[in-house]
Length: 526
Image (cartoon, rainbow, N blue to C red; front, side, top):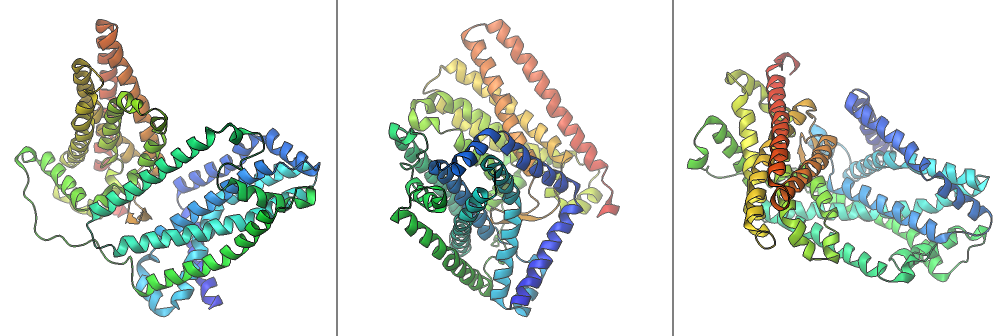
């Protein structure tokens, strides 16, 4: 079985390397990651080198080391969870692989492949850190021990995360409820985890003892990890505690046991063909509502909305936006009143981001399978692009005005809410056109699995850039609106007019560019 595992792992890794070398965008991303692995540690050179000097001098900062180990553990947990939840189907030869190789060998091969690919993103960063530690310590002993101590923590995080990812995937595939119920449950769990972690951290940092230098014992699992760090650095004078020995023993057990559990679960899923089922069939069809039955573009928009209603996984690429939005709402837990103040303008910005991000960030790649039909059966591509825009605008207005306007009346005057609604209309239209241009400029045609959804997802870089740009542009509009309502009406209206004109030109340019990009496509490439 070892030879089968090695053959499958080697083939998968060679395929990944070859695909990366043949894709200029992936090469640029890989180069950027390598540069960040070098540049980011350099920004903290002094602190990292000082840690090495203190450790070599007998004054071991176990609190700092424990904080680093917690970061290593969470990195492994994330990589393992993503690898378990987003398992590849072994390409289009999945059934052949499952019937010609031992299922356990396939599971081990997939585990090894995804683990190596994930570690390739963080190991260079860790090596640079250890090199700086060694420079400060004046020798290799300190970085070697620190690195060896990180291996059990990383391994435990990987196998625990992998098992959690496998369980989540299994439950998701076996759950006999609608896709919308699954999506709602997933969002509820993510929000609950975020709120819980924020409340826990807030309660910890309310205690001044938690802020003492060199100590993270009050932050779970800080105290156990700090004791483990003491065991790792015992050669340099750190105290060995029974808790640290117990943690070290537990880590050495969790790694192999967790690996066996994960492989057993993945083998069971392979034998049960979990994950290979297609999207549940839909019986019947729906007519086009009168509101959308006006033009060809509006009818296309309705079909996009209908597809999303039937399968919300088409919006899976917006998960990074959700995580970013959750991270920006942390202050609301300290002062809930800020929800009433920031919430209504926030819904306007969220609606504009949704309008552009839902259907416009990858118009070419999303329709790759239908491109030959689209390009040969229609005289112009405009209705398709406008249909995507209208579908996004409809979703965006539901959030920006349908939620933002009633929400805003709680705290703001009707005049401000009216202005906010007008601004929302401008922003969602502008966002749709701008996203269309961005998506056409950097299309993604490769099918890949993300959040248990296999399709041509938009570029992650473009998605995050659009998200950040939407926040900045929306915030500027909200500030201009506030100035217009409260201080200088004439000057504010002038600034808003200029603001809207500039954004309108950008959106029109995005739509124009996307149209030209579609018209320039040659079917010889397909």
